[in-house]
Image (cartoon, rainbow, N blue to C red; front, side, top):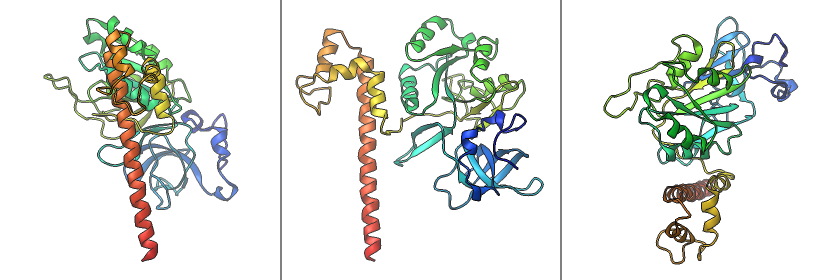
Length: 345
């Protein structure tokens, strides 16, 4: 079967392109393309031309596929498992620093055109958290839109909308009343892939169900005393929106630490341009922007030309990125030393 897309190709509506088809070499003609719809550790759920299939991962894979990845797999007869052999190049990827002490990136979703950062207007809104998401997305290659959910539970939507729009394009939505649902659907046209991310309890799965017109994604109640939701979405999973594209539903993230790749620091300075520009005037290059002498940021705060919250966010995020770099360098040195000892042994 040809791997190139045709007008009748079922993979076309899932994001398969001629560029992806060109990545397949002649000696891989026995393999078939498939998209990872859900990941289960050592196995994945695949969308294939023959329908939904489950498949184990080959040990030779350099990294496990993420939801949204395109892979090449060995097809099987009937409805048997497809063995995943190779990961095709990613067009975009939303990455964060893995939770815990690990110094590695974690891919939240791959090959997405846009990431919708959802935050609830029922007490979940956090300006600082939204900045973190936008920084993590700055080098992803995907577009970013802020999604203010549960607008029916907020008496001052306009204020929150103005704060969000100062950061990124924003859509206000309510699955209960239907407000903004048409604008949301317009962000998921046929052939496109979007990912829904955000804290637990902001209504991501409820929105997916509203888009699907049926109960597809698991939802849970929100605790009344703190507006925190249960982690009802336990793994990342893709859905095809009727008449639209693909949406990735993700589990709620308690915290988000952006991954410090080559462009993240520049993206941070761009997001906080007035702060980073002022910091150039600090007397010392290693200024801690707190009690170091002749700190330009402290001067700007005293003069009222800089925001305390903006300066605090910039300083905090820069410190996290710097710490990541140090930890990665230490880990690389340990691995190099271990390899050297192994060669001597």
